[in-house]
Each structure stands twice: as structure tokens, then as C-alpha cells.
Length: 133
Image (cartoon, rainbow, N blue to C red; front, side, top):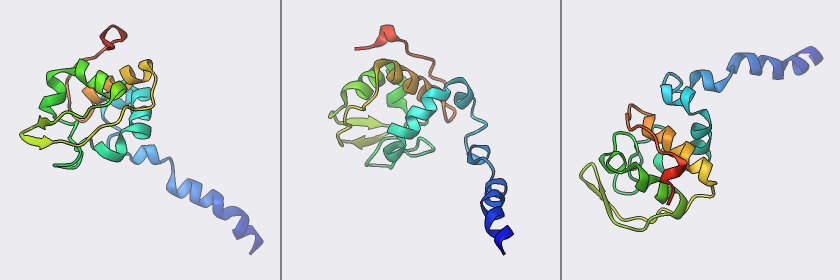
């Protein structure tokens, strides 16, 4: 019985494995190219824009395949740092919620926007520190 108690945590560790191996987006090149951006996204953005970047229609706009985002990546950088309260139309759907400024450094804002621009099939290029507001 004592052996089972001691081995149970080890069994769980090996049985469950590393959760990132089972991440739905682990084959997304943006994860390997922008790992810091993915980490920041998971910490600061995922609650509203969801793991798949699709947001919640009518409430939180999508970042995946977002015409609004891809039309002006520099604006996205500004919104991460300063927040946004403007009404926006994303892929034909109106959004009027407030996005608060995120608690990230300028460098982290660049990292997360670059991740988003290249995640979930987005092919939006990159922003740099010279694009900061």
C-alpha cells in the first residue's frame, strides 16, 4: 500500500505527460517562432480572445483571421499598450466592449502582437519597437 502512495504522483506525471505535447496548436509555427509571445498571450489575452484566437462573437473580437487586426498591426500594438474603447467591426461583426491596457512591457507587446499576427493561420508579418506608439 505504501508503495502505491509513493508511486502515484510518478504515475500521474508519466501518464499525463507534458500538456504542451497535446496542445491543439503545438504544430502552429507561431508557437515555435514566438514562444515568448505565446506565453504572454496565455497570460494576458487568452481569457477574452480564447485559446484558438476566435474570441466570443459580439463580445470579444477574434484575432484569428481578423480583417481588423490584419489591416493595421500597428494599431493592435497600440491597443495592447493603451487599451481601446472604440467601436470596431471585425469580420462584419460590431464590437463595443472596452479593452483595458495590458500589463506588459513594450517589448512584451511587440512579442505578443507578432505571435498573434502569425498564429492560427494568420500571415500578418511583424511589428517592431519602431512601431510603438
